[in-house]
Image (tube, rainbow, N blue to C red; front, side, top):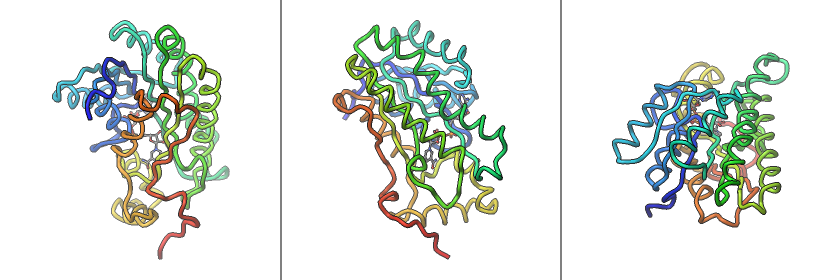
Length: 270
Ligand SMILES: NC(=O)c1ccc[n+]([C@@H]2O[C@H](COP(=O)([O-])OP(=O)(O)OC[C@H]3O[C@@H](n4cnc5c(N)ncnc54)[C@H](O)[C@@H]3O)[C@@H](O)[C@H]2O)c1
């Protein structure tokens, strides 16, 4: 099916990826463009956003890369203003940016907590702050927040700030959904499970003794399907929520985890 987002404009935050391969944000940006949206590709790392821009333009899609730090209000305001001035409004806000670090309250520093909460939760609050008034000027809109199954379940790799920040994302999603339901602005969260993405390759290796193959073997073994998900799995869930096909769906948390959260207890094989 094509043109599921025809004539729509979208902002995707974290539209690059921290390393080679297809992350959740990059896959979403590419898919939204394939389905007809004009996409603003936002990333702290302009080169990463430009990689995604090249993929989309090579396929004939319409997009523009923009450097911004979505933990900063001025940057978020500028992103929204650019989307309005270049593409005429904001129909879809896809809040993808997120970082993680393993550890409980004793192991993690106060700085880790503040940084993870700012990148994962405050960024979504700020992007909503500036995007929602523009959606109100149009026919409404759809906000897709990338949360995590870690917002509702613990994993063997305890990450207290990450899990807390993602629980905050779920609550933010619900509050925005209810407040703006009558204005046709929908807000939903996608909860990916164990996905093999550049973010994981870059940030979680230390939790698995620094060995990427061992990390991937053990992460795959955690999954009922015996394999991790990928960025495209998150992206297709986001596409449904971003499109008008989900016009009566708001405030929901869509789990994309290959059955992981229904498969308890999660015991790692020896
Ligand atoms: N991979 C998994 O197993 C998994 C599981 C559940 C949820 N998630 C969620 O998926 C999302 C990340 O997916 P991804 O694969 O696109 O990650 P990624 O880390 O590959 O890409 C994210 C991009 O965000 C950018 N970024 C980081 N901080 C930023 C900031 N302050 N402002 C603007 N851009 C910033 C990075 O430069 C990077 O290019 C996160 O919200 C994460 O919590 C991932």
